[in-house]
Amino acid sequence: MKGVKIMKKKLSFLLSLVIIMLMITVFSLAGCKATTTETTASGETTAAAETTAAASGEKTTLTFWINNTSGQDFLDLYDRFSASSDEYKLDIIPIPQPFEETLLTKWAAGERPDILDWHMIGHWFVQINPEENLVDLSDMDFVGKTMYDFLDGTTFNGKTYGPVIIYPNICGIVYNKAIFEKYSLTIPKNFDEFFTLCDTLKKAGVTPLYAAVADGWPIGIDVFNWYTSGIKKDPNFWNDINTGKTTFVQPTFIDGLNATVKLIDADFYQDNYMTGTYEGMQNALMNDEVAMAIHGDWILHTLADSNGEDVINEKLGMFGLDLDSNTACWFLGSPGATYVVPKTGDSKKEAGAKEFIDFITGEGYQEFIDARGIPPVIEGFTSPVITLTGQQEIYNYFDKSNSAIYEQNLQASYGNTDKLLQGLFAKTITPEEYAQQLYDQFVKNAKAQKLSGF
Image 1 (tube, rainbow, N blue to C red):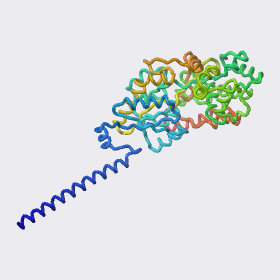
Image 2: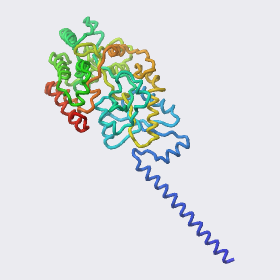
Image 3: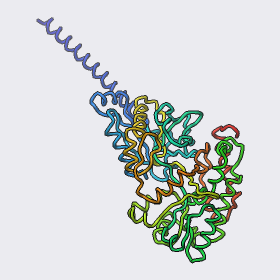
């Protein structure tokens, strides 16, 4: 009997020891999982946690950095993807303004989303180092179906890294229809006719043009609008600059800059133009205080949102113009210009990001362009009726003749030009100095990127 009791005590002790060892093992494993989760970039869950989520029917979350100026039509498109996908949902993270600088700061710190809404403009695109940091999307359907040469800005060494889903931003001359009608003005066909038209308005006591110099960025359009002729005539324009065969101090740039200086010297811009703002430009156009503004077509949408489409259709039109013809210049910028898939090392999430690209360029695309009211840039889709007449007007110029702006396909950054542009309007720098300073920064960055020719 006593031996039985001793045996029971031994068994009890051994059982307790086994339980303790099992508990230690479980806690150790739990501790490993916790450590793994804490050290995963951007707070992403572990593979083990994702496996558990998949088993329970939960969708895998894809982090998605977007421009915080993205309109509702973009947000609706993203929501439709999350609703349609069996495996994935989006965690949308708006990047605050200034969008480019804020995003590049996060990028330089090593942060990466699963999907990124970014620029297709060359000098911005190269700053995320696509060949090293992005997944090659060359085998996807959108590559062979994209119209025009819109994918040039995301293609490097034969590999394409992102699609475009929006019609390009088109730049030209926004004009007040009532003022044109009052003074029997017709659309000019070249810069000389445009200059004469401005002179007629000035003599009649009407301010011909508005410049938003204080904001900086809008006057870039005043300048690069006049570069279009030279770029259109030179099929080697971008290649020659990207390979160091020519500089910015050349006729294409200097002639365009001189055109802007000629308008300034003739006093065709509003009084105190150095304090002009983008908001002031909108007010001046709507209040009949100015006849024209050299700007992009998005201003029509902005004004239609706040004033109603009927009002804008009655008041404003838009035409394309460069130095010697009615050509519309264009560029593709964020939001919606291109979507890229950063390399994260997570094959499941990279596959999910590609599923998103497939959706926005395929199944979800028609509803998007219908909602946005733009023609498709991918073959196989139907253009909606364009109800904003000024928009259709500039589309007509684009269809007849167009050229990308000078920075669209540059493969190195040239820095922030706002201060240089303001200096040009203030007459503290010459066109030649402007072009040289721009090029000096371009060369510095081209060497850092080890571009051939620098």
